[in-house]
Amino acid sequence: MLNKKSVDDLNVKGRRVLVRCDFNVPLKEGVITDETRIVAALPTIQKLMNDGAKVILCSHLGKVKNGPNEGESLAPVAVRLSEKLGKEVVFVADYNVTGEAATAAVAAMNEGDVVLLQNTRFRGKEETKNGEEFSKELADLADDYVCDAFGSSHRAHASVAGVTKFITEKGGSNAVGYLMQKEIDYLGNAVNNPVRPFAAILGGSKVSSKIAVINNLLDKVDILIIGGGMCYTFAKAQGFEIGKSLVEDEYLDYAKEMIAKAKDKGVKFLLPIDNVVAKEFNNDAPSRIVGESMDADEMGLDIGPKSRELFAEAIKEAKTVVWNGPMGVFEMPNFAKGTIAVAEALSQIEGTTIIGGGDSAAAVNQLGFGDKMSHISTGGGASLEFLEGKDLPGVSAADNK
Ligand code: AMP
Image 1 (spheres, rainbow, N blue to C red):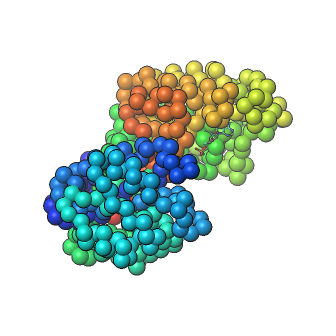
Image 2: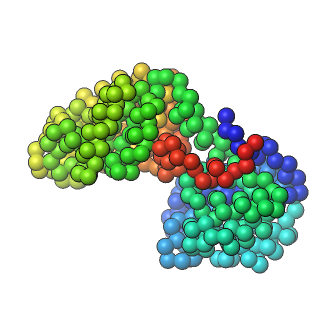
Image 3: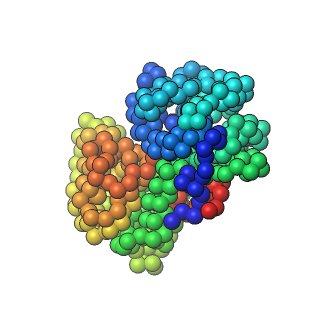
């Protein structure tokens, strides 16, 4: 489906292949607490190793706000990756990322060997502002380039975008890896070629972060369900009393426009018809169930039981569902029922279920529904931008077939 060169289209024997992975794993005191992203990167790495490439891996880790530091070094990833591959991954610890140590490590590689470079964000703005020099240095280490970092593909960074220009200049190929391909196939099929009815469920805290998604999806879906903190801006726009609930007043007009657009397009647009409210943002705060309005000193923290039923019924109709954002403050068990109900409804349908990354992925996994979904995206921001209909720099930069 994706008209981009993939690892299957490359002839890599004896060639140096730079692979941009997403090894942005959670770390607690230097220990990796969730290895999902490492596991997700293995198919592409193993394919290249088996084909006799010299595999040079790079990734960012963390935000690196205060410059290079051991706490954000990729060293623990090299160790875990070596275990997973059953072969030593040579780690270049040099904070310069490229440079002499990297050049020497690459020069010493044999076919099938794997080298991991240091955290690309240790180069600061050179990485995040797509710097030419750093892009060229990365390209100088390799003959071909593979992007498999879906979670970073919405960012025009040197290791995602800039590097490809210099690979092209020297006659190399820029391809996407298996993980990227899978993400784009699932998300792309869902959005552009869905088996209908197609439903989208959006939640989470802010309307502002999902404006473009709502607007774009209203052109594509049959059913749009909105819950979570963002639904109170819609409730207020309709004249309900939302008390101290989350609200973005500057988006009230926008909310009205979206409700009108849904009507215009014949999209079934569902908002909660009842809510679980409390006076404090606290799991142990006494709560009650109200309809669409609440008292001025209350806030909505979850969708109510009737809404859970309404949403679950609508989800049952669907053959394709995309979900991004929790229905309430699911981190607090007393306000997690709405999110659990949606996860459960999704787990029961016979159709394609796609979970946007970030909080919804965490919620689905945490609640034990992970293996019931067709696809859980590894990239929160990237999957949102994809659903907005934007071009992802990491995808556009790959060569066409
Ligand atoms: P986002 O990062 O925008 O996807 O939002 C996820 C966050 O929204 C989670 O941490 C939830 O706890 C939070 N959230 C969901 N519903 C509500 C609500 N009704 N009030 C406050 N926060 C909420």
